[in-house]
Length: 246
Image 1 (spheres, rainbow, N blue to C red):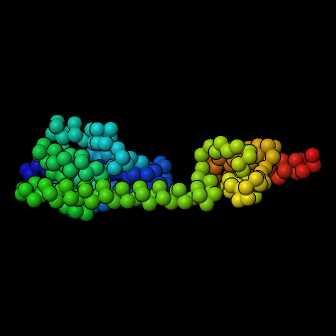
Image 2 (image 1 turned 60 degrees about the horizontal axis):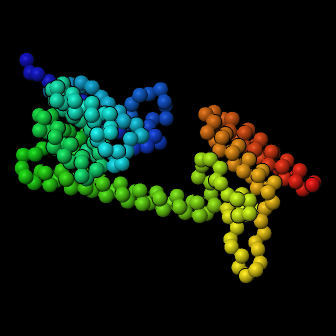
């Protein structure tokens, strides 16, 4: 009787936005389905175990701080499985100074490291080490570029005066524009002439509006959010009307 190779599947996504919207499911459907089909196509393989990392960055988080990698390494030492299968090799990580050596470590333990899209990573020849390193060097570079694009866009959003979420920004009343509670007034162009500013009660009402919006935007029932948004607008209108009557 031929002994089948036991396969350990690892799934990972960097952000929670990539996780299946159905929170009752405890897996990552696309990667799981691809790995299941890959195993089914090999008669000498049998599924052993799976591990999913949700919202874990393979570029920012070191392998020593990832519980899934630590667990898989421990089971590799105990010879509990024979094949480590991922959808793509960058699911193991994107750190060019760490991930290539983790892959090589698994192979040294007698574990075959496979990717659904890229095949098996072997180290039969010296050039295989270079190929393994280049793969993660490229993945690391892609992560750096993505980070640069994200930071640039977020900076542009702030400069355009849009609210990115979170708590109320601590802005002094004298620095707030009367046209929009989310932008600062530009400095006066004429020496000795001050820009128009909001009064303290107006600034206070706008800060209250920020707090209401930030609170209700986190409310779990999306169908109720328009109601709370409407209440916030009514409150803001009432504050302005009260101030105008003073």
